[in-house]
Length: 456
Image 1 (cartoon, rainbow, N blue to C red):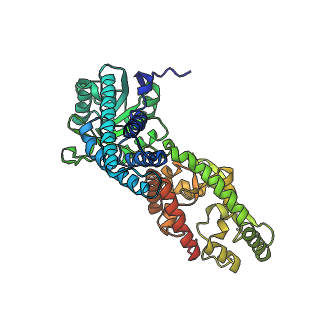
Image 2: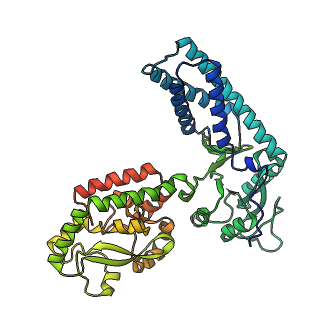
Image 3: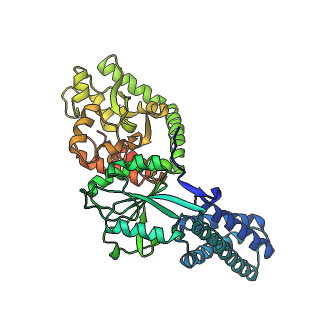
């Protein structure tokens, strides 16, 4: 049984950030303002409320922050209310029960005051809870140099940020040369994941220290599957321009690293989309699949579907399915031969299937089984994974998500005999910047390439 201390302590309902409570507060404020001004159409006001919440969400008014300031929020609240009011005015013009312009102005004024009042109270509650120790997050600082020590000292002196520094990770100093640290050194960088799990760390502040940035990138990716927030002190932070999405602790800017894709609620919906699209595609494309199967059988004889071992999520192997475009001489050729595009043994059917990417259609079954996703890094054979992992920086980092039928690299034409380093860079970019819209863009670009017969 794990004996790790809790990542947070104090009032349970305040542990997960202020965002959900601000949503509830804005709903209450909207309801109070609506009923106080005696609206004409409740349906229109309900639609306006949904739109207002969406605008607030897009403006970043529900994001978690270390510094809660009503003055910082004020211009965004006012802009969002104006946008929502414009939508409501347009909506009221086509729905029955139109409010008079005077009543609409009164409603907006009351609504703005109610929202600001609710946020003022919410921020005071959170700040009071932090200062009284009711909400504290155990915080690990990566890098025990001057910047790291300054961060630790600031957090110890100012409890209003809600972060409790428990220790540093850094290189170990020779005996007698260690500086006087405000919190203890807990080990070297490679212990990051272990320390997070053992000590119940909730937040990690990266202040660099004695490690190269290339090495630090790989170390920080160990946090991808852990329930922690990662903040990075920018290099040359004294020159760093802060913006709406930059946190700050007593003059030190902190860039909150985007949460890994596995912690996004949209990622859970991705699997559902995969299953639905793969099942419907197999059904709709069954005549095409049958025609491809017959053509392969006529040209090359038995063995219509070709099975090949590929490396997928977390480096686990699986059997990928393809229509056979060429019979390999033996199993060794299948595992180690890089590209058959210019192979003289490739017949007209095989060439057409590869150029049109129709040979990949059986992988819809891989998607349905859960081996793959519609969009993700293309899986590679173990033989080449072993080779590329030695020479290509962060090649294995592409295995953090399931392999895909198509990917960001393929959408940019990186197929066949193209740079493996570029592919790895594009795949890792996809993982770091994933969104449902990025998947949609990749699918659209891939369809265009298929129609132009730009397959491998």
